[in-house]
Amino acid sequence: MDAPTAREKLRSATSDAHTSLDRHGLMKCLLEAEIPADAYVRLLRGYFAWFGPWEAHMKTRHPDLVAKFGSGRFEKSTWLQNDLSHFGPNKTPADLPVPAWSDDAAAMAGFTYVAEGSTMGGSHLAKRLPFPGALSFYASYGPELMTMWRGFIPKLDEVLTDSADCDRAIGAAKSAFEWFDGMFDWVVSGNE
Ligand code: HEM
Image 1: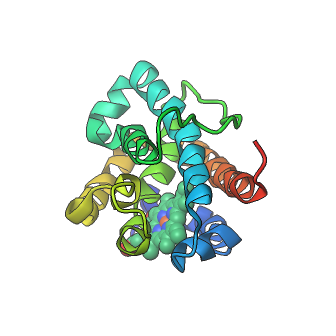
Image 2: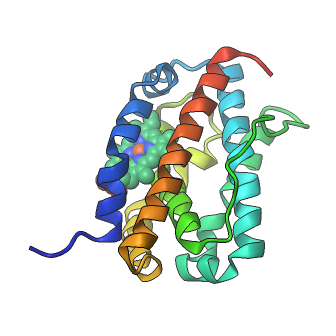
């Protein structure tokens, strides 16, 4: 049997974390398109709190990774800004502490895996949520979604060349899932 790819290792190490996100009460509201506009705005602000600084870090400290994965994958904060502007001016990122970004390319590839993977559930949501004009983040790559995902998977093996790299990527990916879980709690809490 072939050795597992980096993506296969990441997927199996984080599948419980994905299941736990799927079971979050906020996800249920999203999937049933029953999320009120104010909670949707909080959710976008939560994503923005992560994607803004993560993309800035990737562009300044990991330009090689950005070039390898494709710079178009590092513009999700622009989508979020577009969606937030639909709800009025001055929508700020949530004031949530983000993970410690690293100079380690393997760890950052693990974060990138979660960031890219987060587009996969979006197309379904973009078709159902009642916020026309504010769905760029969930619509993400539109009809190119699967092509983009299939193009991403082999790049992980180019960056994560040994099992120590994979382990560090998995650690980062798990911490990213935990962060998103906490961010969903924040959305539901209503606290600033
Ligand atoms: C309602 C929300 C969500 C739904 C319905 C959903 C659904 C899905 C589906 C169907 C896939 C598999 C796609 C495929 O292989 O064909 C997937 C993959 C993935 N999702 Fe989600 N997802 C959601 C939220 C999230 C969030 C919030 C994150 C992380 C922040 C995330 C991270 C990932 C990752 C990393 C993968 C790739 C797994 C792999 O390697 O195959 N998802 N998601």
